[in-house]
Image (cartoon, rainbow, N blue to C red; front, side, top):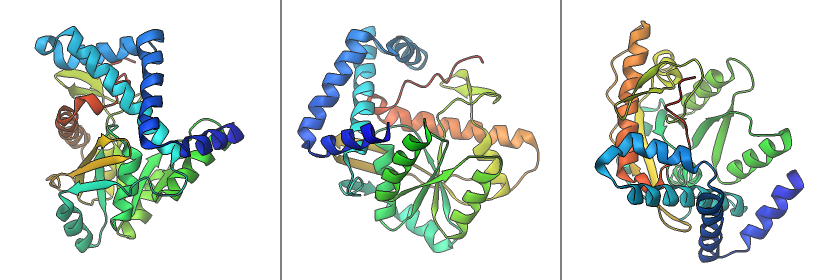
Length: 284
């Protein structure tokens, strides 16, 4: 697998941005239109969010574009072997990051799977805000090592959760270095509460709110959208207002619900580039 990934990465690195787009379109057409891999789930999620606001044809278009952007994000990531993934990223709202950096305590980045999230971390580091993301092991040891090595080359650093307590220690060290810690807030997790998300109860990750209570730092929502292959736009929003370090569990759910609302706003800013393959509304 490691050799295969390296060969594929090398071959993709030889393609122009335009050819990467063509390849991504072909793969998307095959898997979405022909095979229908996860198409049913994507359309179900779009039905939950948009209901009668959009026609079935519009939902199909959004689903196809979402699939395409995910495939293109994956190809761009694999193709960038020289650490330049975040080079072509414009930014809006950088002053929020600069203000947090002046405080010297680091900051959390509330982010989602939209556009090229890999380019987002790389771009933030290149702009002078070293960025870390909390990750679990991906596939085999060799595959996991390959992916994390590509991230490091591009300036996006991993806080790996291998055993209990690893993530908290890594977060604390990163914040002490006055760095950014990214929390991806749009994935379902087993054992988590069902909180409203687009007006329907959805599995919601409450670990971010719980960790923030233990290790406070500014929370800055950030999302990225693709302009075209290899070029992206980063939007930094105003830091969230959080209330102290309350000790009860209800506060964790209250904050997590607030995070859900922020995620909703970010998704609606560009639903065509959001990753609709997550089954947030599953019951178990």
